[in-house]
Image 1: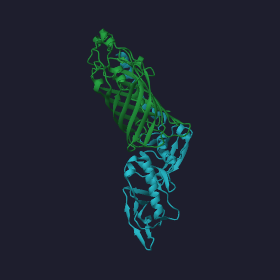
Image 2: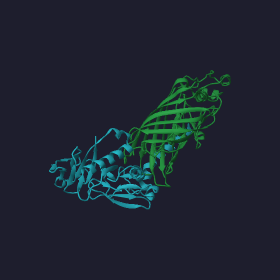
Image 3: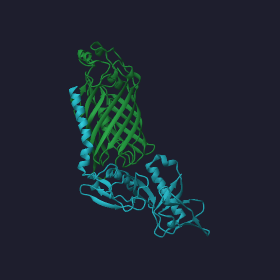
Image 4: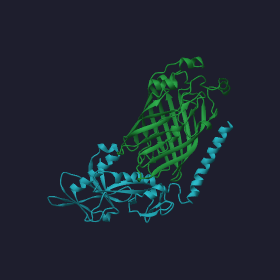
Length: 290
Length: 229
């Protein structure tokens, strides 16, 4: 029961978090033919790209829909709950991984990119230096958005605690990157409470193809950029902590706020593209439940 | 920077307007802490309905719990209120009611409110053992009911797998009603002591033993709750 709002608005993170972790909302039994939908708008302050020392503030659209069939859309993820047990959820999962261009801006769905505002928060690179270089990742090849496919599985130790996992394939320049995400979540409070706080922690493992795309620097890129050539390997990619606070005003309106901290690890952390291995993403949005 | 300021200003306006518009749209009907989302309640309660295991000795109800200690629910009803739905649900002395599972109310994103304002509350599901009209409970049947309840608890909570059924707690409104006797198979009866529970009601604990027999109640209990340890 306490899975209610704790995971209800996962969209904010999947749209705004640098890590773009796949979201799998808790199974939501409902009458046949019904759906439970949240739509919202807010703002997110996030690193310009994973590992960037500077930040950007963007508009944050929020979308989460669950249907009685078990199908769900949560931000940049979509999937299907196949399990029938309240303690074990699993099913197929699709997730869109935003692309990255020379300015470092991730291009998410719902037109986040055009609304991005640079330089709101100061970073180690001053604005004039960035302008002189024409952007932080000048010379690094653009990466398009990627559709990843895979599976998810969540196991509830108790109704408040769940272990989460997902395996996705299709990231990377050649669509041959793979990521495995493992985590634990402490879900939110009981029915009728206005404030729900959920905590999460997890690890991401990535194969070499994935890490090389987002953290590697090829010889060609090195020759035309300020970065040294770098060959990224596979393995542990990041560890992350999250805190979500949902404040429900009425059955329809709520405010969802999310803070995510990510620490890049291993080969990703050592990349010359990484200016700051630990990054924090903060988002808040007003949502309406239809 | 001007774009950023505009964006932040817009968000701030939305934040400021959100609660106000929410309150005005419900015309003051939904006061803070005095409603529960029907969808959320439905989501919890439907699990029992969909449960495929044995449950013939059990009943599932939604229990209203006042947030303020000592607050009473006497004479109150729970109202299911949606755009085209208005259903008044009587509460028993423990604040429980059977929640109707309605598609219309779900689709309207209805709210559950109490019939009197000024009583902040939460709700929780409660699975209990159904009372018998004759007031006589065979101990084997009582144990089977407890096992059904435990199996359901394990179905929804993996943390309950280490627990065992040890008894049943008969709950009465006051001491005068709380007569529970244990009638042993070989003959003889024993009156079981009642104890006052936290919320002022009387509870009689019937512990399962090796001996078979019957549990006899003088008055119908408010609830019979399985006891796991």
